Image (cartoon, rainbow, N blue to C red; front, side, top):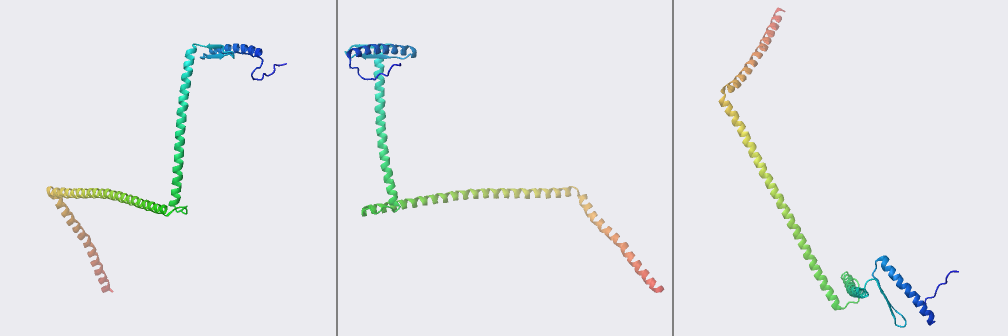
Length: 239
């Protein structure tokens, strides 16, 4: 049969309690020593018996272990106090923000004309002043936006006007260059005619030659018509 489960409670029998303490104390010290060796852990174990006798174990030095323990507890206590203080601070901030949100929601509903039944005459006057101030601010903002937009449009218009003026100047420059180019070409033609006068005579002679050729070509046609007329008259006479 297996060993039954032991109920963890105070042993009333003094002898049994003393025997159990001795056995478990030895086992606990042995486990602590093994744990420090196997896992390279710093261990400090202190045991006081029911009679006030001290039993202890330290992997290095009990004093250094206790100092390290106290320092760690102080740091933890400081961190806990800091965390608790920070928690309280954020709790206050949350409560304040919640109140502000509630106030703003109520103000918004009142500005929208809702939940006005519980307001006094003074509250309604204050609400009217707030609305007038808000309306004035909105109008000023609207006017400022319009002025800014008009200013921007003027700026763009000035830029477009400058671009058009620049383009007009460039067009005038191109026209002047074209006119100068035409004058240069005409001047070169005149200079060539003056340097080579026979070119002009050739041109005039060519015109005269074309006129003479036209005359010579027209004469045979006239003679042919006259011969035909004479032949026709001669035939009529013979008949």
